[in-house]
Image 1: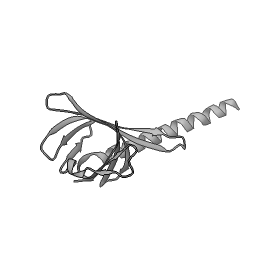
Image 2 (image 1 turned 60 degrees about the vertical axis):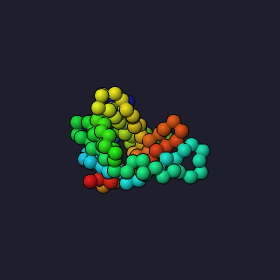
Image 3 (image 1 turned 120 degrees about the horizontal axis):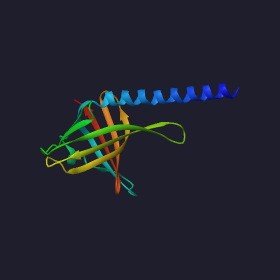
Image 4 (image 1 turned 135 degrees about the vertical axis):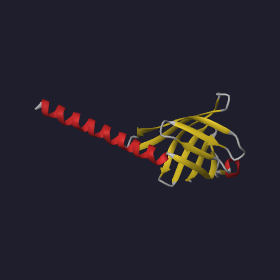
Length: 145
């Protein structure tokens, strides 16, 4: 009887592991390509309303490549390269939360900024991410080009 329980538990763990991997692969495939900023807001900790900061990001484009590399071009012409990966975390309700970790380097090879954010929405045409900052949350909404 114990042997049967071991087999059942092993099967559940293997099946759930494959499920997460396939969900990660699908999200990575959807993220590939070039995105342009649609809207940006900043929710300052303790504030009643968020700040529209879209003008600070106007014209920004980001391209995600399959090999975990990325390119970021700002609306004012600054260029960054970097790396990215998506991960999945389970919450207390057993729901999956997907995160994006990205590092951006300037032309001199120095770390310029980093995103560690939660993916709020990721379809073939829309990508929304919430990035935790020291004093609030930056919410970026992107459209696929």
